[in-house]
Amino acid sequence: MLNGIPEDVYHWIGYLGVALYLGAYALLQTGVIRGNGYAYVILNFLAASFVLVGLTVAFSLSAAIVPILWILISVVGLVRMLLLDRMARLNEEESAFVAKIFPEFSKTTARRFLDHGIWLDAEPGIRITQEHEPVTHLTFLARGSADVFSSSERIGRVVSGLVGELNVMQKGPASATVRTAEPSRIFMISSEALAELAATDVEFRRGLESGMNLDTRSKLVAANKALTRQKAAAE
Image (cartoon, rainbow, N blue to C red; front, side, top):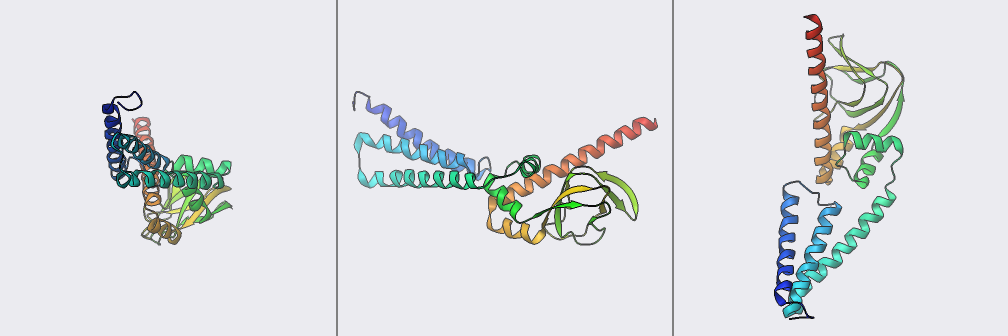
């Protein structure tokens, strides 16, 4: 007994700490949580704390050094993250954009991403992409609309979402020409800036790819629904 508590309780608390260590690492490797997110740091803090409690039954300084340092590092990491999030302020327009397209971004990551791009008030007729020419920018249409042309024939309209997401990372050729159809509010970031951010931040790359894939899927779903409605009307 230790402080009136059976020693087995301390042992099981220590085992739980080990399980949290392994669980946190497994969740990180499977992409469930982010390495720079609160969940991973908190899980490691709890794991180290539980292991340290488990060691009180037969305390050994050499064995306790690792969890003690792990706790200190976790506390420093949490404080750093809180400070960065506090400084990474997003206005209403930016918050709406990130929440809609890149929900996996932390506030700090979103701030870095937005600082590398620019918001523009685009007049009608502004070209966003040109068919068969390299896509040099990822563009988000926040307000307004843009017409989509293929071989000079109008084939559709974009009213919200990303433009150029399919080929921007490789600067591949655009599959269509896209021009603003009315006064619009857009955000643009260059492929070079995206490549630089993605090369230095794995979590950013994952969030970017996830957001672009999600936006592409939503467009395909919307296009299929529109095609279905057209077929139904024709019949």
